[in-house]
Length: 298
Image 1: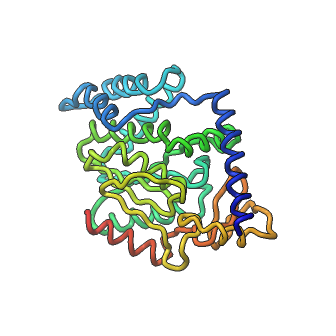
Image 2 (image 1 turned 45 degrees about the vertical axis):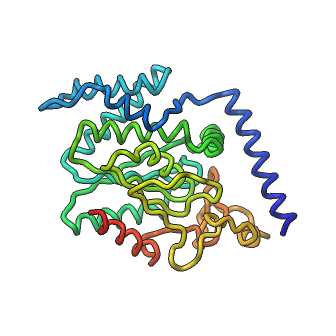
Image 3 (image 1 turned 90 degrees about the vertical axis):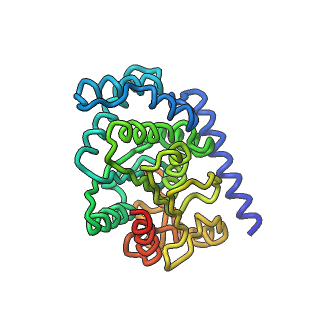
């Protein structure tokens, strides 16, 4: 057991060193900011008036983008995303943020698990008389560069990527005083969601539901957050760091292109089996905890 665990640690270390080397050669341009710095800058944007024109929102979104990015193309892209989310927020009570597990490159269409939880949350809110809409936040690309960048960010606690989601949420809640956000994520997406919530802990219109956070992630406790590490059928071997269980589950098998039903993680186009690391709305430990959380706050 000790030998296999040592092998696993060495393998992860090699991946980390290679990733950091590639990141150093081709660095990503996200800006590391604190919660206070982000809130201070968003507060410095022009205050909302009685009417918010498209031109006004466009101007403010470009100002925030220029603060976060040096590259002009990235500024324009992020400003467009800010305007899109602001428009999505009009006339709804809740925006539910989907961000994938794994290494951040997949979309809802690629995910056979977590979207069911988003739909479950949406249904519960609608039964309570609220309107809700699901939006996606994709934190990396589904290619080798995206994988390398994600590994570098995992090692850095998402200090470069989390401010981007936090900035989107802060921007929209500044200019739409009615909407509330629920940031969700599973696996590495849970760790990312928590890193974003650390930047948004002072924003009382933001909540988070997280499942199966990575065993190595040691983020701080944040308010208005639910963390699930047991689906009610089988304990999560990945979230709890049960290496021997994971090694035994993958012994004698190759990674597959479809997720094992017992739980898995996607690495590029391949799935590694992680017993218990599966969270869908049908699991009793997922639905019951999420429903209790929703009714306790809303």
